Amino acid sequence: MAESLKTVDEWFENLDHSKEIRTKLHFYYQDTLTGDKGTIWKVTESDITSTSPTSFGLTYMVDNLLTAGPEPDSQVMGRAQGTAGFADLHNTALQMAVNFVFTEGKYKGSTISVLGRNPVAKETYRELPIVGGTGVFRMARGAVITSTYSFDKATSNGVIEFTFYITHYSM
Image 1 (cartoon, one colour):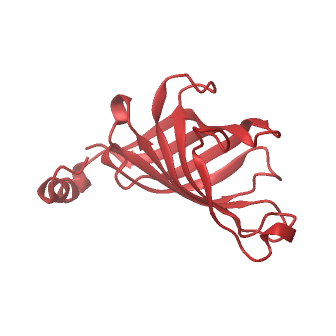
Image 2 (tube, rainbow, N blue to C red; image 1 turned 120 degrees about the vertical axis):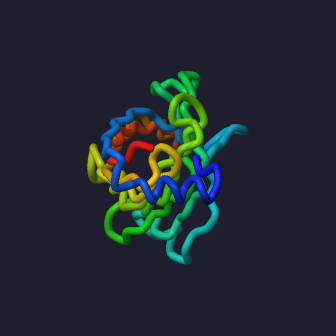
């Protein structure tokens, strides 16, 4: 974590001597649209959302629970916080800007930022870019492979599986 400007400045000055490392992480996020413990909330929609076959313009804020297993009561790892909006007029695809915030374990206090297109209806496995991070994952880059583990059509609640392939630096 960034304890102070001086700490980050020292880290940056020593970056040439840091070792580039790779970390693979695997976890699930609990996508909960319904109930009193909802973690996804609609914030806006476009004039054509109601007639669009792809929900174009519908945008959500998310604050989803990250867990080690697909069960909602499995070990908590953190939260996925950001926005997801339907951004394709022709196919069901999300534009996602999400920070994965680690609140437990050895990565506690660190984040990974993901920004990209997620073609949820067309592809079983989707790839999104890692565009940065903080703490242990400062200056992170890499890729995320995601897939829908389960989805309940009646409630629109789902469990999404994530595998992160991260390149970052030792601190």
